[in-house]
Amino acid sequence: MRPGLSVRVSKDVKNRMDGPRDIVDWNDEIKRFLEARVDELYRRKIIEEVRRVVELLPEMPRGSITKYVRGDRDSR
Image (cartoon, rainbow, N blue to C red; front, side):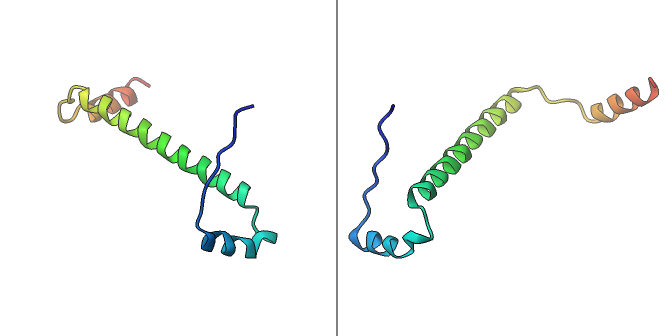
């Protein structure tokens, strides 16, 4: 098993965290936050990669999409 993650917080924060301990599972809260943040950063990275690929694509002449859609409709 891989070692866990330790986080240091100030004594003030620690004392304030102790108050709602019966309401909040801090380990679960922090895990969910980290998972969500990692997912968000992963999505941003993928979106940026897609943008780079799209920028490399050649530009289509104006009206091409309309022509393709009409051609598809007429072929039915």
